[in-house]
Structures are given as C-alpha cells and as structure tokens.
Image (cartoon, rainbow, N blue to C red; front, side, top):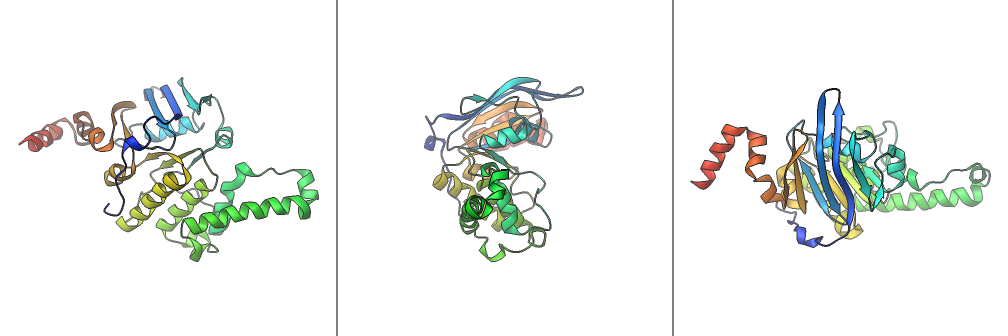
Length: 279
C-alpha cells in the first residue's frame, strides 16, 4: 500500500490501556473456540487481530462486545469490568463496531444510516416529544450536524441522499465505518472492513482509519486478512490460531514468526518457506 505510511508501536508506547482481555475462554458444545486469550489495546493504538479462518477472531470480538458471554476470563474497558454486559450496555460505554457482513439498513439513505450511529447519544423521552419544537428538535439538529461533519470527513457528500443499497460495496463499507465513527467511540472494532474491495478502495479505507486514529484519537481493534493493510496501519498485531495467541508484537515481526507461517501455510510449506528465506 504505497500511499499509506507505516506506523510504529512507539507512537503509543506508554499510553494507558483502553481494552484489557485476560484469559478469555469460549466453548460451543465440545469446541473450545477461545483458549485463554489475553490481549491489551492501548489508548490511541491500532491493534491488528489476525489469523487463519476459524482461528477465533470474530468470536473474540463477539465476546468483547457482549454478543457472547465468555465461559472464563475478564474484559475491561478503561479499567471498568464489562465482561457480563449486554451489547447495548457495551455500546453505551463507548464501543462501536462494524461487521464482516454489512449491517446497513436497506431502504434508508446514506445520511439516515449514519444518523443511526448517534443512538447512544440520544435521550428520547415523553417530555421531549411533547416539547419537540423547543428541546428535542434542537437535539436532533445537533446530531445531524455531527453526521454532516462525518459525511464530509468520509467524503460521502455526493451520495448522502442515495438509498444505501444502490451504492457500490466500497462506498457501503465507508458508510458503515462512518456510522461507527459518528458514535464518537472510545474503542472502535472493525471486522474485516476491507473484505471484497479492490486496491484503491482498500487504500481509501486505510487512510480513513489512520485519520480517525490520528485526528480523533480513536482506539482501534481491527480484524483484517490483507497483510499489506496490517503491516501498513497497525501499531501491533496479535495472531490467533485455533483459539490461542501464537504471536504478538510489531506487525512484520509478528506475522513472520515461524508459528504464524506454519498456521497459514502448513508445517511442510513453512519449512520450505524458512529454508528459502535463509538460503
């Protein structure tokens, strides 16, 4: 990715821990999907969570966001234990996410889809409805201003009023990212935000993720299969395989570890790869 500059873990070294996961276990029937996974994300950091298909990445995200309760372990957000919280409670504490499969609302415009991201900041009440013209209308206008600013930030002005289902996949992914960012999250979780994109679309999304981190201080956990993206924008990487952490550290070193190469390529292919790299 030529246009996206590499980030160094030194940029967030010493920052306070935003997300802490300790000894996370998750079992489905007889399958141990997560086996004592521990990871930290520092404030302002972009942490990549990578691994082969079926390694437990999305399960880990679902535990963090309250969709799956862990069978063991603890999840803390800025020092608060959120392990047992339901998804809406986790969201209310400042966690926003995107999904592997787009979760946009068909039949609604780009603007209205993004506006939904403000739901954690809205305070509906019977009194507000009664005096809409005086109080609730002003609140709605304030939310719409935030959304309009995000539309400009994400360069979506030309399609703001289009039904979301008619725009290309790359722009739909951008809308979903905008909806997550408009929530003003303390922690942003992105589940394969670049799946199905061409190189140009990937570079756009990578640039927006970096801008959100640098200009808005957004702490980010990203699941991504495109290793060029991971090495370009992530400060650190945690690698999962069969529900366990097998490597972590700065991106290039973490994904080049022999155990990671073996997990992706198989043991025999990994040995050939290692022999070739040392020849």
